[in-house]
Every structure is written in C-alpha cells, then in structure tokens.
Image (cartoon, rainbow, N blue to C red; front, side, top):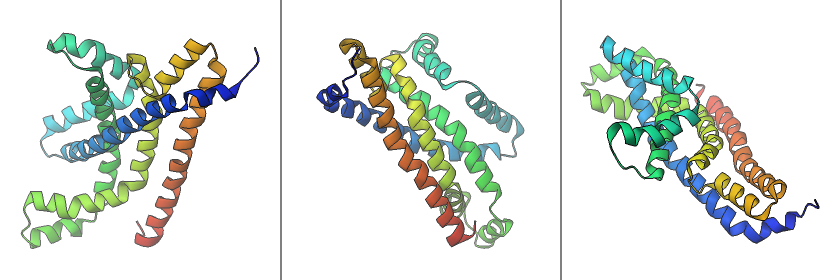
Amino acid sequence: MTLDFTQVFSYWQVLLQGLGLTLAFTLSCAVIGSLAGFIVSLLRLSPFRPLRWLVTLYVEFFRGTPLLIQLFWVFFCFPVVFQLNIAPWLCVTLSLVLYMAAITSETFRGSLKSIAGEQHDACVALSLTPTAKILFVIFPQALLRAVPTLLSNVVALFKESALISSVGVADLMFVGQSISNSTARPVEFLSAVAVIYFVVAFPLTRLVGVVESRLLRRYAL
C-alpha cells in the first residue's frame, strides 16, 4: 500500500474538533479534580481516624487501578447500580475528576506537610478562622509548591484522556480511529493523531521544567 499523508489535510477540521473536545475534557477535569484533590488532602490530615482511613482507601484505589477500568465501571456499572440514566460525557467527566483528585491529593499532601509550623502558629495568633486560614494562608502556599507536579499531572491526564474514545466520546483518538477505518488508511491517520498529541504534550512537559526551575530560584522552595 502506498502511503499518502496528504489525505490527512482533507480531514484537518474534524481532527481539530476532536482535539478541542480532548482539551476541553482535560482542562475542565484538571481544574475540578485539582480542587477536589486539595480537599481530599486536607481530609487525609484529619484527626478523625475513620475518615482518614476512608479517604486513604479512595486515593489508593484510584491510584492503584487502571483508569480504563475506572472509566468502564462508571460508564457501564454506575447507571445500573444507582438506577440513573447518565450521559456519556458526564460519565467521562466523573471518571477523570475522580482519578485526577486521587493523584493530585498526594501532591497537595506533600506540599501541605512542607509548610512551616510557624505559619499555623501565626494564623492562631491572628485569630483567623479555619476557613480563612485555609483559603488565604495554607492554600496559596500549597498551590505554589505543587505547581510543577500539578502541571505534570495535567500532561498525564491529557495523554490518558485518549481512553475516553473507548466509550464512544468523539475525542481526538475516536475521530482518528473512525477516519482511519472509513478510509482504510490507519498508518496515515493514527500517525497524525500521535503527532498531534506530541505537539500538544511536549511543550507542556518543557514548561514544567521551566516553571519548576524558576519557582525554585525565586522562592527557594
């Protein structure tokens, strides 16, 4: 078979639409999952032992099982168990958010432990409420320390999001597979999909290194 990569350009708009959906899922789930991960990290530091065990079990389960299994369970089993009719996009969002919250909770837990005890003592001296302490003192410092790892998690989520094509969501991978099947040219279109993923992910991985070096140099974290 003669390879003809020029055929890819005939479908560039469809591929970009798939990329747009992939980025939409990645960014929205990354933001929601990171915020949820910060809350989970606080719960893991709770003095209430049963709650701490329960949250730890959640984190270890979602970190220790494949994302594809989690996605399939939410998509196929969740509606049956809870007798709910859930749209595919909502199943995908829920799966990615739960996964992202689990992995980012470990990032935030490490950054929370790195905050000096004097910061907590200062909050007590200023009579700050627990909510004000978390929002205005703890969270900004934890976020600053966690930024490089959070960016790495976003890149990982972007690449893992290719799995959502397995449940019929028309992301970049799904579009590439569909076009390659209809045109009988898998080499050209799957290669194009791989290149698109690389073009998006590689600059982000380089950005992680730049951000980390600048934060270390400027704030001596």
